[in-house]
Length: 234
Length: 234
DNA sequence: CGGTGTGTTGAGTTTTTTCAAAATAGGTGG
DNA sequence: CCACCTATTTTGAAAAAACTCAACACACCG
Image (tube, rainbow over all chains, first blue to last red; front, side, top):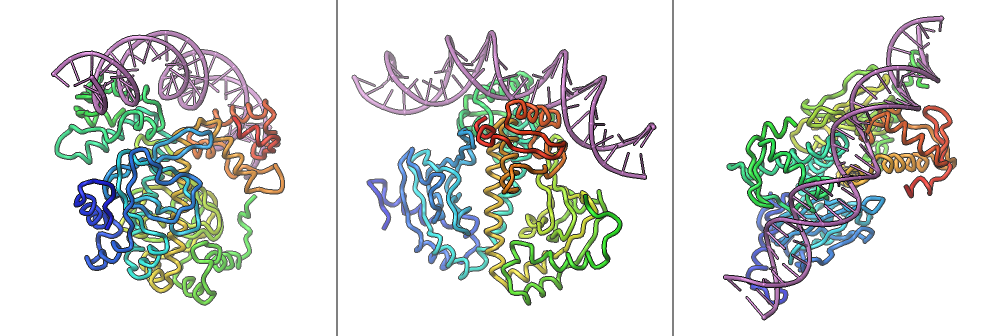
């Protein structure tokens, strides 16, 4: 069905099956409804570095990541790049332009070899009518995203880099749970782009945090939080 | 500037009627459907300075502005305030939390004596089922808002104050059309809060723009753009 | 005509960036 | 497994951007 190249053929298949059920806007459906949606999806593979879509291109599909990683970034008016998010399996993109005639404003690039499932706009809209609960899920998802995005805007508008970095680290331990140690979800160049600063500043601030005894840098990517409260009181 | 004290008594009523038809998520409906929605709305008045909702409060209504102005702002983690938007008649707020159990993350305050129409969450959800086209409108509205918000985030993350201010001025002339002269939609204190900077910096940058011949400051609030291209090339 | 809130200007300071150079990690081919 | 290459990360020094605080100017209001 959708085996590409010479990957282990069952691997791709498995993750394609799995990916729909991972998606928050679909995972409440009955399995036969899910199957129906699955039939409408088209699996596509991208090699590391390939562009999935670019700003200015017509948007006409929803992309769901089955495996791999996708980097979503935007260019500002003056040409500077900002990392918006990194998609991991179960995440989706392309949704913004699905409900109105519209073009992409961001870029999507495969960070490693990546498989996605595509659903076309018309198929999706059919499903929205057939399974109205999806609309509510999407509305809920959108409003959550809006909250997040506005919160993020406020952070950029009012907090200095140090604070934004501290809040980011706090979120990382939080999602790691259990332990106070975690691996940064991206390299520092990307982290800088995500936090709207430079790699140098990230590096310096982390050293400051370390010197104050808030964190310990186990390795370039691995960090242990020693004093979360102190970190957040900065 | 705004009628104080001596409003005509039918004024409130009139604008209440009009407000629903101003709202982009309802204005496509037949007038009898609109009437039905109107019956479900409850008009409420707020005096200048009154709080409509605050962060942390349960969200259970959509608010549509019939007349007046509402200031929406957020507090960052470290307590600094950012102006998110100013609502004018026809705008609505409270929508974010309408599709999931949730609390407000922002504050809404009447900037002058203001009348709004409220629709409760349960009424609205009833209408969504009855008139499914509203869902699509809201989805479209949300995705537009998300684009705007993410674009805004990227600006804050990558552009310096000067550029953000220039882009803001450009948007102002754009919506003014016709002429290159316009009135700032808010005072400079609020503008600073909106652009994530201080009134002092706004003041200085405007003086810089003037000295470079990009703009002319007619009065404290009124600005004429002399060289838009120059302004945007900063 | 004061009074209050808003806007402007100046001086000094903090924060962040830039550019350059050195250190480190990770991957590849031998 | 090691040597080498490249990309990433760190550090330093200087410059740029923005903020703070304080003083003053201006506008609007009664």
